[in-house]
Length: 68
Image (cartoon, rainbow, N blue to C red; front, side, top):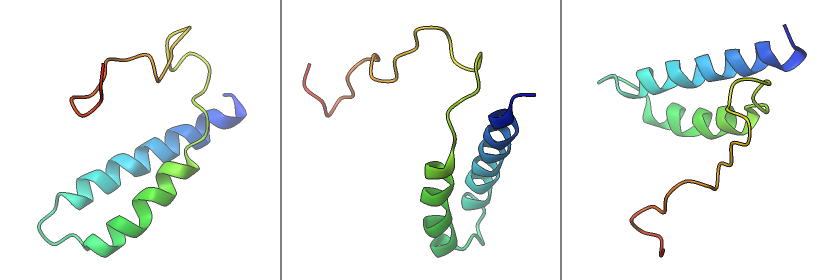
């Protein structure tokens, strides 16, 4: 396994678990607000093969709030 694959997989898993926790009725919102940005920023570059070749994260359609 590539060196960053394990970190990427673990971070994505933790973000998913945090999202599930945030939806719980007894979730600590301050905890979620404190941890979510840190996890998102710590997400390493995706390992090769996770995204299609030539993928451009800015190449999608405009959001409704953006001008064309």
